[in-house]
Picture 1 (cartoon, rainbow, N blue to C red):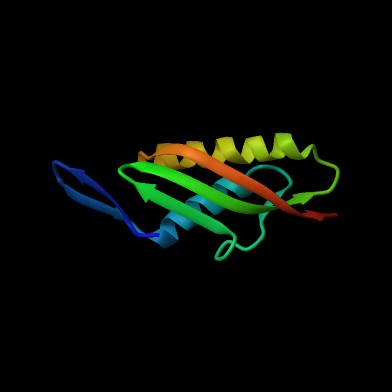
Picture 2 (picture 1 turned 180 degrees about the vertical axis):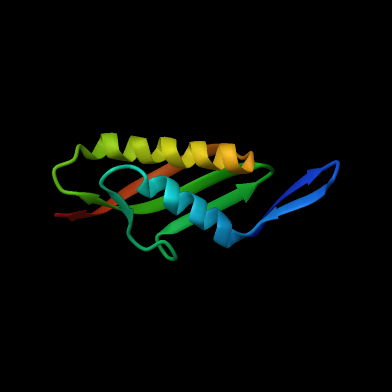
Length: 101
């Protein structure tokens, strides 16, 4: 993933891959019972022309309704990237890989 650059009348704003990763991780983990399994290896963010596609691997607390949790993670990640970075989020693909007690 490359840095994301916003061009404006006052100059260029650069958002680094590390900052984008932190935004996604924090947004996903705000969903109660969700944790990113391996943020460095289990998270992919593709950027192209102001659009983003995100793939992430999730660990979920046992007993939760997994489709509901995944949808909440999708909404939170999409909302955070749109609000904080001005990105149009095309997809947030969530894979539940692990259950935790």
